[in-house]
Image (cartoon, rainbow, N blue to C red; front, side, top):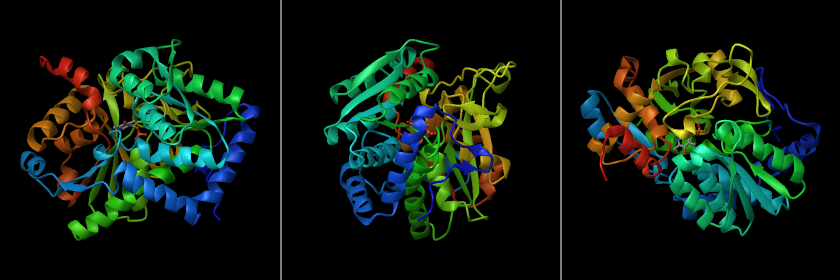
Amino acid sequence: MAEVAQRFGPFGGRFVPETVIGALDELADAYERVRDDAEFRGELTALLAHFVGRPTPLYRARGLEEVHGFGPIYLKREDLCHTGAHKINNALGQVLLARRMGKRRIIAETGAGQHGVATATAAARFGMECCVYMGRLDMQRQRLNVIRMRMLGAEVRPVDIGTGTLKHATSEAIRDWVTNVASTHYVIGSAVGPAPYPEMVADLQRVIGDEAREQMLADAGRLPGTIVACVGGGSNAIGMFRAFLDDAEVGLVGVEAAGEGLETGRHGAPLTMGEPGVLHGSYSYLLQDVDGQVAEAHSISAGLDYPGVGPQHSHLKDIGRVRYTSVTDAQALEAFTRLTRVEGIIPALESAHALAYLADDEAAARSGPVLMCLSGRGDKDVDQAAAALGIDG
Ligand SMILES: *Cc1c(COP(=O)(O)O)cnc(C)c1O
């Protein structure tokens, strides 16, 4: 049995209080035991099929092809997952694992609210107590998801410290875990945090890439030339990329949030603009100010509004296997409108960042089939997008 990866090159590790090390070891052991266990895999696969709706379709976007003047362009439709994004793949897997470990209580942090909703959904399905930490500002930006979580029976705890966004909600969730570690499993929502989380989350999201690979071979008769995914913490991207890392001919592109512009300092692009440092238990690229303090991120999409990124992405950047780039809020909004109008699909603002990449990269156009990860749907974003686009209700 392979040991759950702790490091990706120099990145990752465990920078946490001593009290949590035992819990991380327990989690790593438990995950190592179940990851190849036929019964666990069978239970998870059945849930993914009948509860989440997997496999999600691979959709050929002929409208986008017409607009951009190249193709084929395929969308991996994670927006069609139950609860509206890829996050449920990970939340269900971790809640199933927590049950096996005898934990009764689930906690989570959330930014856009999608991970909170996914976790509250999985907890409701298995009758577990659930508490979600969410920044006050994010609660205002994502009111619909707050209501969904509360309907599902979760307690949503507002976090008032700092800017009221994901960074501080995560710190509060870690504090809760340190205090209640015997009864509680902390469901981290992206491929970030101390080991074994980055490896475990990537492994649970790998279903995206495994399915897409099979679907591309069946549909296009070949592997994609370029694969594009947006990168917040990096879970949808790494879940997609992992199935293709050994295929040197497949170009991989991760798109970060350039926010109001990289030069303004108001962005969420740690791989493009950051330096390595420690945040939330792991060593990875990170937005820092001149004193080495963790800087605030900014993005129109709450799910990309995070100053850190998963450690495997930092490694993939440094070894040059994945190219990381960024697009602004304005470019993402343009792509949001484009997909909505020409395909009849309203994407999440996060996913719109990946779509925006199509607009100005000629390399993608020449590389053969393009595979985009459409990580989620845009229902949660309509108020914000309407305000930005000047659309009346
Ligand atoms: C949370 C979220 C993201 C960003 O998270 P990753 O871990 O980088 O995937 C992207 N898209 C959607 C729809 C999300 O909800």
